[in-house]
Length: 460
Image (cartoon, one colour):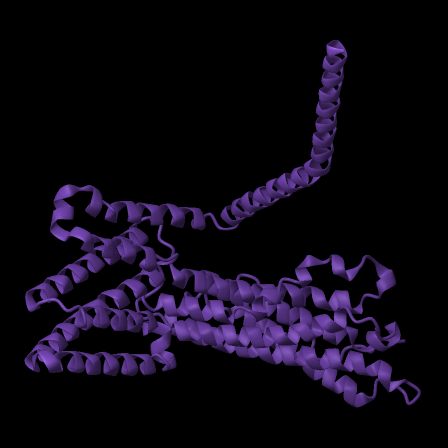
């Protein structure tokens, strides 16, 4: 009987273990796929993140250099903590040098210099006024001291905040005003004795100057990035993108779909889109460039406003091109016979305007007067006159459906606007060439001038 009970207990224990093992395997079977899927998702996201970082470095290697420069600047100012003699001189106030590097060091020399000057001057001015406010508050007695300090803090904060709304001040000195408000408030209400207030102002100003100077020196001497050069290249590149589109637009628009491949396979027709949203970048670069010292071909008081004027006219032309692009990909296209009657003049207008913009772009890049661009603009204006003559002569008979003519007429009108915009851009570039005394280089081969006679009318 005892043997039977022992055998029964062992069997029960085996069944229980088997049951637990089955449950465990079932739980693993149900839980493993989600865990495996999650780990695979995390791995994919990590790889995508590193791929993005690699692409950022490849698109502009200066970003990698800037990161190394920022690390170098922080390492240098950190010596105020690691090197004992320096730490004894500044103590905890050395943290302001580290903070200054973190907030002041920017990608370009102009941005770094602008922030550094703003922070230094704001700290100096706010520290002096805060000491004066502290002295006046002490004269008012123990009861009147907090009231006087409160009035001073209120007045400077209210006035400084209101001044920040001024567009000219906000563009160049907004950061300085923020530091002014912060420094004045920290020092004036510190509650220290007079000698400690002076020591606080002295250490804060000195550490801010050390941090700012470190940023500026590294930014200027170690592979400098000039905002003025970037703005110069951006303006020229934007005009070149518009020129590339216009050079190819005529052939693409007047080619019927059955003549060849899809128009959507032409990436050169999409480059102009980056010009539409370039205003913010241009304004920022121009603001930074005003802080930069003389470098290369760029003077201290370089006419950056003229660059902004050219950029505004370029965007104005890009908006017309955006409309032309809409007609290029429209679902309903005019018949070949209707298009062919103005094909030659419209193609000439587009081609000559594109060549003019590319010549103007090259003139800015090389700082050479754009003589060839003027000839292309004259050619495009001659085509506009020829188109006007064609329209007045009556291209289409009374049986032509006006709804089919409207798209072609709209394209012709937009091209006329583009010619006008191109002429305005050329005028602004010539003004820039006069201001900067661009080099005069006569072209060895002059562009062809079209015949002034009326072009032949296509036959539908």
